[in-house]
Amino acid sequence: MAEEDQSKKKTKNLKPYQGRKECIKTKSMELATLCDIKVCTVITGPNGELQTWPDNLDACKEVLDLYSLNLKPEKKHKESVPEPEEEQEEKDLLMLVESKLAAVNKIIRLLENKNVVVADKGKRKRIE
Image (tube, rainbow, N blue to C red; front, side, top):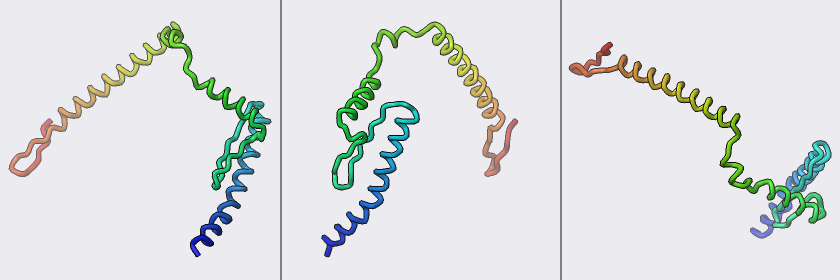
């Protein structure tokens, strides 16, 4: 009985999977065509089967290789020497953040001094 239930579940789950798989493949084709880019889709089915779009594995490997190349960080000497404009923008941003932080700290100190509460025989008083 349990084996029959599991086989029914598998066939029941295959219909939505097939529909979604076809939708993903269609959207991949549209993306490749409309944006004129290289697209690859790798889908693992509920039975563990592996399917790709495009069906040609060499085309998929080419896209995956391009992807892995773009993930590699650039050489360190380029990262360590910032452009003069970028450096100035970073300094300006840092100064702006520091001034905002100083203003917020000033307001916090002001509020702390205004809202000092002292316990007086079970009653609370606000001291200004």
